[in-house]
Image (cartoon, rainbow, N blue to C red; front, top):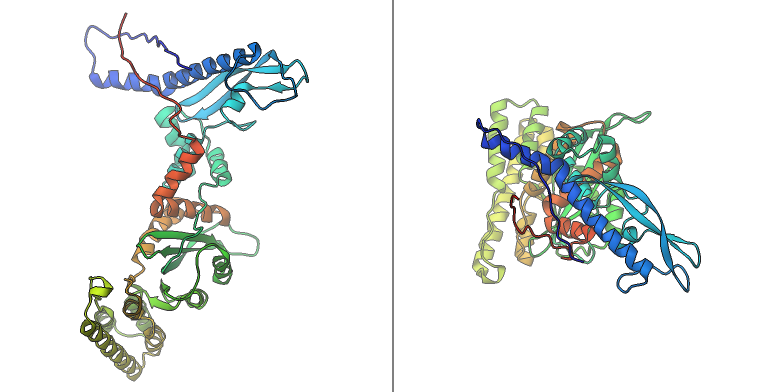
Length: 442
């Protein structure tokens, strides 16, 4: 169906002069608050009349699901419906038809547009809300939508839309990862009876052999034990061979997730900083803490070749292995130095971390896959999550915090998956073409 619309706009401009800015702002305000919604309403009305009359007259073309063996439709009445959209509130009075045979009623436009029975918003507005609330609070989102186009979405409504949406679902079906990166952070949650208001958020990402980030999941209020069980049961290939975990030194995380992989790499950013903190607990002087921090950072920073594994000479691999052996020996000497000075906690930390400080070298020597030495990828992500959960808002429910985290993860690490989800929801199939033929004054 093709229609040509004519829009009548009255403009009054002073002959004494006016600014270009005022003209632009007035036109923008008119279209954002009224004109675009009216255009959508008119297109819907024209389609509703077209569908209804063809069904009543028994013409060909689109038909709703049959209500009986001999459906014969006649006009019954009109009902008003309103939809929140990104161009404003769209109102329409659409036809309800009644079957003369069985008496069942049908709303043609409702079925034609594949709308839910009590739907009151468009999916494109839901997407806008989900994206905006992942960057700022619900209260500011509501105010923001009101400012850009007088879109009436109260913060409680925006919250309900996001919580009911499945846009945060992380799809890992059929994907295999070689590198697992995990981290956790605290946030201020809504306190329950008998519990503190400290919430625990945990995130696990994967990296496949092509270097593509695979978001595995985000959990709040779940122990690493439960997370490990859930990960084992999902569709990711958790065969231990050829997999390495990159993480900080959290004991429970390592105990659970390291059982899923062949190697565990201690994060090279956390290690020197954690040693400095352990030395502080041992009451070591500030100057000595800084010196030891620099020494450890220098010892563990072994660079692996940038060439493909197959192109590296065997003697170069042997030299790398020897360099790693010497670095581990110096780590042992450092542990002895800590013990001689009475720095028990620092010595214990380095002893526990020693076996996993050079796992990335062993992993490369065995599989030719480059593993990051630091969890910088997830650290940057955790900073963005922390900004949204800690600095912008507090008093989260555990379900809300986990859902918001998954939205942020999906938007940052799987932008393509985010786009595909909304393309499917919005049904963008090229079935609507709108062309501006020109603007003229009569």
